[in-house]
Image (cartoon, rainbow, N blue to C red; front, top):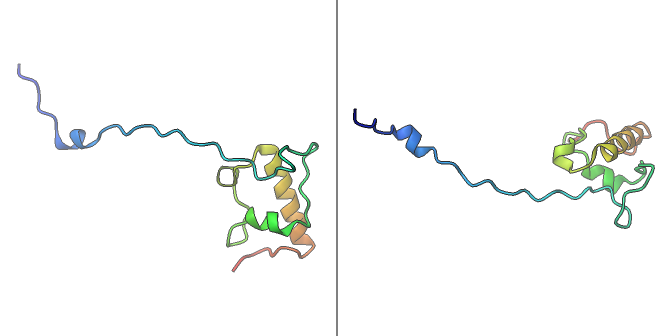
Length: 92
């Protein structure tokens, strides 16, 4: 029996090279190391505004590059800053 010809669909689908992703640096660094216990100052609006998107929602860990502990600290700081009227609840 002769071999079956490959369909055009299977020929077009070639495996792409796996790209190695560079690890994102945790943005919550103080002088090159993480503070222990993890604390993010709610008055640091410049840092907190980087962790919030245009709609005013807190960015996820995958997008921001935070570790779990620093993401919890960021979330608490953003909520505290919103309550103190330093950050808006909604964006534009």
